[in-house]
Length: 494
Image (tube, rainbow, N blue to C red):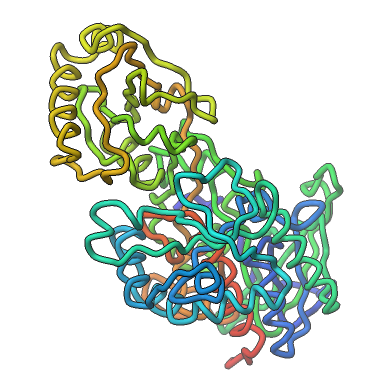
């Protein structure tokens, strides 16, 4: 691996002449994973120090929609009149999280999902006991507490797991991540946990026994300038927890590990530069699924747009349009070269809430096909076959839900441009450090690096090659808590 990704991020603790600060547990990053890790480490009896690179905490979690993926029969599901089972949730998540989904982490999370919801409520996070149907969902989300946030009602998922709404939305008029982080940071401050802002963690210190003993830092200002300050060293007697997010804003890492994501639009905090992952790799940690990302094509706002059909550059359908936006995004990017169009007629068309441009408008399918530069006869044939099935209320090719099936026959016909070059797909990375169920960072040989933990998007968590809205906040907070408890109770063995 390149030098800058490895050894320059690790220092022999014996070469450190003195420690400027010390704590039992040092948490690097104050997003949702870091806040939850700090709270649980503190409650386990550890003295905790949080280091935040930016001028205030929050990170990408503060910019998020504020949805948690929870289920199995939470109090909110019950209050809204829905039943759910652990079995159905486990089956769905195993499918939705994609190939290589970590079954042990999914099982643990599902079994503790109800408890985790209760814990979030105990911290003061508000959830309104109202349900909003998918057909009425808005962007940004409204204050309603429960909704579907994935492909649960869609084929093929609904054939294997009984659908249930599991999107638990933090109450707010609009995106709710800011509310979530306000509550969590207030909890951290209320418990007297020390927070240092404008402090960039630069290196890890490892002792002669291979234990992570502390971190190197540079202090900056609200404007940055970390590089010009003198490096200091902070000792951690029980452990360091890396919670710095993913690497969506590091083009060099994207080019190395996930080239298809270049040209897409990273979402979240620009501080997501892969620092925590690079620190963990320098210490010998195994970084896995680094090619994985959640790639979204959020065309379905308003939801009525799902009544159209999506075609590729050959004029062919390749998906049922009622699937979750990241399913569409992943397939369009990786299998269709980032080319797709949403086809509507006069009756089914609505103006998208997001700025997807029109690619073409025409009085006939033949003319629309020509304007889009599709192979002759391709779109015409696709529409003919679609309309034949729609007249019977069927989608024999991809089994779209019957509520979204309607003939597309009335001119003018429109093609909404869903190509990556027309609307760079929003994305965030899913790969990261390999960890056990308690957030301990593992080597490629499956050995624990003593004193080193990771959570959130710095680790490779529940989502493997697939995603569902709310899974990231659930993953960050749940496994952040576990990493915090493990670090807080850890006692060095050497």
